[in-house]
Image 1 (tube, rainbow, N blue to C red):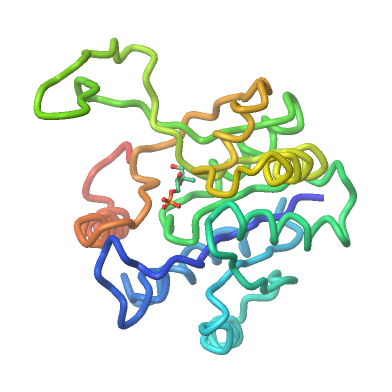
Image 2 (image 1 turned 180 degrees about the horizontal axis):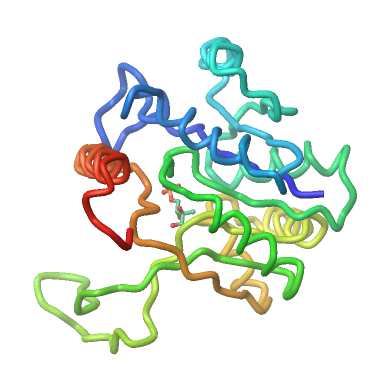
Length: 238
Ligand SMILES: C[C@](O)(CO)[C@H](O)COP(=O)(O)O
């Protein structure tokens, strides 16, 4: 069984979209979260979807699910105070009804440019190796800098940005979220960081750079452009 866990619990503080959180803004004719959901809805290997949302937007979300005829959403879960808490809530909810070897694909609701190939390769990699982190290659020089000067130039040959989906076996990833809480960790960045913290071997799936996360206003406009390019097939190889 393969379950997608989508997170749409942000308030859009880094984008100044407080009137309507960014996951509900319209791009290319539909709310961002609906674009994301439709990729999982249409994928033949996805059996069910859980979505974590801001409790005050539950009614809004339910209306969207009806309007866009999304059938696979089985759980609508209240997001927590942090991303970690939201993911933990969602994993616990799914674990109450699904077996431990369920493949869970943890994805950001604000990554609407995911594609079917990436969903398939995440599932295949978890089935083969037990984990899959979607990564994309860096094409620029990578430096570290704490203050006003550059501390280090990091050889970029082996540098990737970790994106989402981040996919695992349900039993294993839930046990790590439980352990993190027991150890007083409540705000880890993502599931990849938790796997690394606990020394698990994490496998990589390389995805397209277009699988961007809408974090800032610039990302929103970039996303809009990607949709236009994809529709008009202006650039081959995206
Ligand atoms: C999971 C993630 O998308 C990996 O790049 C990212 O860590 C999410 O970050 P956010 O701060 O919760 O948007």
